[in-house]
Length: 392
Image (cartoon, rainbow, N blue to C red; front, side, top):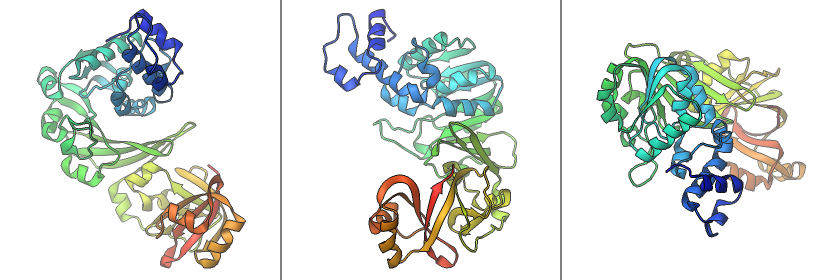
């Protein structure tokens, strides 16, 4: 269902109001209240997640589940920066956020979506956004593939919810089934396939099921891991990993190969230096822990501790940078005195026998503030507490 003018005016008039409260009020004459509330909720979600949609008042928003599942503008733009060509097909179109970004990188594209109502919304939205080079197919991937001729790139974002709306993670449970159809997809894709997968997925297991993968991209936004991207190609190529964090001011990529990581002997620290580093979330998911010591002048605190230190600041390190205030052994005296010295701090742990909550309770430190208290393990299994301030 698309807008009528009375419903549109209601949505604009109540754009910033609480949807739950509005639902308890009687609908004005001529206003489709359920649809209007869906639009208000969608616009509020889009303000941060989809700013390019939010600025266009004629956009029609889908139910909440589709808004939750769709890519953000930031991740969609990043994906579109990775591929280009003559033709593409988004075989799991959804709300069309990725389709719209891909459209600017290709001469012609197809949006494929079996949900007719959702497809109608996306067709409308592409029109008001000036997207004219994308055709709409209201079909499943399996139905659309025989009708599509060869294309340069296929993009597939399998749904990670089952028929009951429950979240799933494994490839075999996602819809459409990419593993079962990958031979046909590769046959019809002249350049390759891009798959968007759950950040909870086991990368090694996915590579076992998708041996045609030539690149794995782990995408984080402002420190939170959001997507795994697998690039598949017909011809065998060396596998590469890219871990990228998309921030408000900068995008931090870190690239490596599995062979490089396996062959690197990490530089280990004898003690904690003046600066401490924590890799961003995408690196933590992708690995590359040893390779970091090859690319940057930092030392790893211990083989299984994914924190790093240096004597001089390394401003381009891909992650958070701390200035160390003090390092102390973790024992009863520390527990007794630290709360008096630092009554409030952000508590974190890395390779430590206690959880962050357990350590906070043990230290009797209130949560928050500017300081960080980090429990971790050095070489020879030495447990320490690091007090530090965030530099970036």
